[in-house]
Length: 343
Image 1 (tube, rainbow, N blue to C red):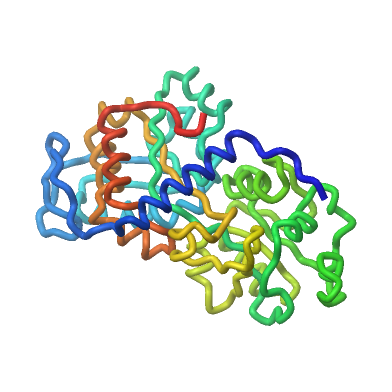
Image 2: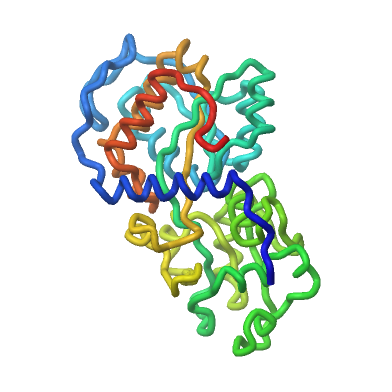
């Protein structure tokens, strides 16, 4: 079948993936953080140190469930070092997170895709200046039940056969995807429409952001999707790599053939660029005003971008950026450079 032309936004996003992967491959994150001036009123003790800062206040983070594990880990370690600050992290999906962010309800927004032009305009209309910050790279993962012994590798075209809008009500069996697959019902689970993962997957697989069949079990909570697949031998789902890693004993990942042969989702294959086209950058977005006016917000983002904390990214299953890229993101944040890389 013929795919629609992919948007300029997707092409630029993929270029950013290549940039992140290429630079990360040149040098893995180190455990030594570059010296940086601490926010006024804060201690300079590294994460896990004994000294506590005198920062106080609260920070609200919301958005992507894909980025949630990273922000949750960062928040826990940051609060341990700064007991006077409370950081809450929610999961309303990338789109839902931007709604709260642009309404001034949160200071940091998790996103598994770049902010859209409409969302950026909404923030600007509300007087909120947005700083886009890449924080990691993800291998968007397609999974099945471990008892599924027929699906080992799938092409992007086969994923399109399953998930295209015209598949709704018509593609309901595995053997409709590939003739040698069994005559068994196809049970689908996936992110809801507020999810950045949904946006990225539909753009990549179906050629248009938001274009998808609607007759599947949708949830913004990836754990719901995991449970659906573990409970049904005929199920298939897609979500961020971290949720696969966390549940790999009860899930099986599908290798993806993007045109160059079957490649499994691994950190190594994200770094070397072979897991394509389902690798993608992950972001946080910070309010410029909040970072300038609230020392605890600046300190939290600085903590997030400290290469010494790259291990927290890796522990959640994602690929940390190189030290050079973390420093570039920090420079962008410190200068208050607003807007998005993907215009």
